[in-house]
Image (cartoon, one colour):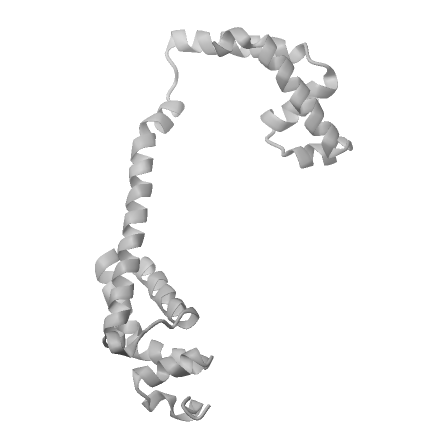
Length: 193
C-alpha cells in the first residue's frame, strides 16, 4: 500500500502513479486523469466524429474503459498517446457501425417507402382477393382458435398477454395457436405456392 499515492497528493502525481492508484481502486485517480485528458480525448473524438453528442459519449466510454480495464503500460508510451489511440480506434469503430446501419437503411428504404405507396389497381384487386381468402379460412376455424390468432396477429399481443386476457393457461394458448396455424396452412396452400 505504500506504493499507492495518498488521496491528498494525487493531483501532483505522474500518470503512471495515477494508473497504479487506479488499479488499486482509487476512483479519485480517475478524476485527476479525466481532468488532465478529457479535453484531448473530446477534441480528437469531435474531430473524427464531427458530432458533439457522439464525441461526449465516446469521451465517457474511453474513461470508463480506463477505469474498468486500466491496461495502459508506461513502457509502451505516454498515457496521452494511449488515450489518443484508444479514442481514435473507438471513434472509427463507431463510424463504421454507423455507416453499416446507414447502408442498411439505404438498401431497404425503397422497399419500406414502397409499402406506403398506394398499390396499382390490379394489385389492389389481388390484395383484396387474398384478404377474402384469408378471412374465409379464419372463419372456418373453431372460435377459440380464431380468437387467439386474432389477438396474436391483429392486435399484436404476446402469448402471455393472450393467456391473461382470456384467462386460460399459456400452454393452452400455445397449443390452440399452433393447431390454428396448421389448419390455416392447409386452407391457404394455394396462396402459398
